[in-house]
Length: 302
Image (cartoon, rainbow, N blue to C red; front, top):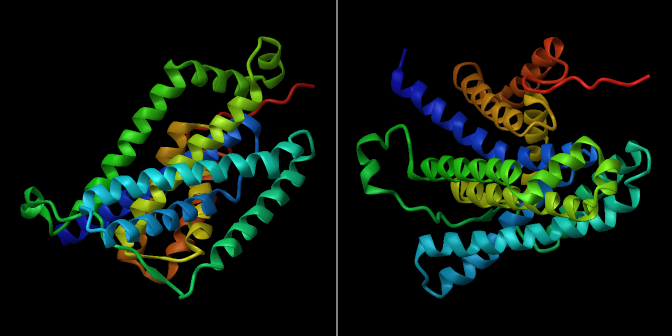
């Protein structure tokens, strides 16, 4: 067995898993609060990448340092994507909050198609080049054969985001309000929690993490187009279901398992079946654990 080849596959899988995790966190947070599958979430990830491209191109033309370009363009991407997420919730989901779940689901699919075609207006080519904003770090020279600086940054940023979210949800006032709303929305209203504010903040946080993932994968791959959010969003949804939809640790665990499964499957079997590996693994897990790896089965009162 070629050890270096295996290490390359493992790092590639962890990198994919990190990106899936940043998107899946938004899926699982929104579902945990209002029981909605936001199928337009992948398009927020795509909008974050396009926003970063616009500002990165402008700053690069002005001669700004690459690392500073990455930080500034990511900040603008987070702001714009968060704004889109909140507006989307107010327009497409809030009026349907008490409607049947199928109505909200159809609205989410409609928002996904709308945002794709909205961005398509400014896309003049099949793929748009994205600048490589993360330089090669000299200290990684001895191990750069199986891990790159871009992979290190993606893993580090994902870790920081996960720690931040864990602290936010467990120890802050808004985090406690999120947990209360998730458990019982009616009782939360009765004790004075502003449920509308909690839902808006949830969409804001989920959109921000998706935008960060969009910027990181764009600078990693070096190109973007208006469709990048669709498949990434589906994969992140699979990861969230795999780990247990509604569970933040489950979303992260499912994302890394999915990323590693895809990477090892394409590396040792065939790259033609990358998407097949993801969904076959999901079917296998859900056959034995219908609620996901860390999910808790819902009990219905009669």
